[in-house]
Length: 394
Image (cartoon, rainbow, N blue to C red; front, side, top):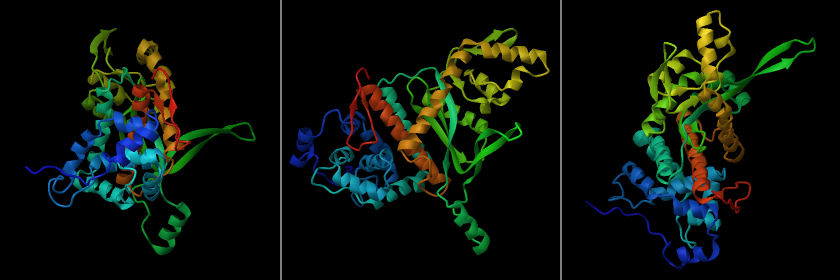
């Protein structure tokens, strides 16, 4: 078997670690992120997507080096051309990528080739594998995960000018710019009319949804899936739960009998807003020995069947339901960060597959920020490219 080899760099020269130790603060976020995450585990996963696996053929950059460069792109909401410039001119960014101070970064087109290599080899599962590796790193580093998961979805607007796209389709007979995107509803607003009546108005968008499961104690996103904008939220819960179970995040409880009905005690509880209140979801969680704490629709307790009313009323009074539903708001926090700081309001690319790439990389970046904050006490501030804010107590 040949030895794996990568393009050489000058990290071990005067222009590498020696120089960086003199000028970079030890508690800079990018310094901590480079030194405290075992990036070689990503290289091991990525090498199988390279022709020759780094043993023969054209000598590649170390895969984790390109991955870290992509992280810079999503961390600072930069285009790939801007990322190349950033990695050339920003000393901490250059250190994070794994370059000597006297080296040029890989060309921006290398990032495109890197992304496409994974898709062509294994599809979006390759990105899911990288995402899962970051979760395993969090577990290995001792990040504490609680027993409550919250599920929710966030919308992202398609990279389409709708008026121009409508003109292209109607006047020129061309297909939609993004054939995978669809219309969806963000929320339904209640607006008071002049006559005093209340009218419900749909707040719509054209694009995609990313459905996520988040651990409320660690704040880490543990699984995700991407759908078109029109997909119902409730249908994605089973996919998220199964992914959490595969990672060992969802812990089974015990089936016990209460008032002649089987309920789950202990183990992981799942909560979500009323959109997830579906009989099949409650039953699915029970079969998997997981606790359901999904917020109930008003009709659950106000139905005409007294027996059902009593069951759901008792359900809503359970301690885990009361505790979990109070934590459901935490699902909104990473969505706000993703949109405000990491460009998640709008699709970078065209198509559902590339939207999934954006989702996985964005939430990997958010998870990286959480891991560094929880284990090293350093919080990232994206409002200033040079900022690093130590936080005592982790």
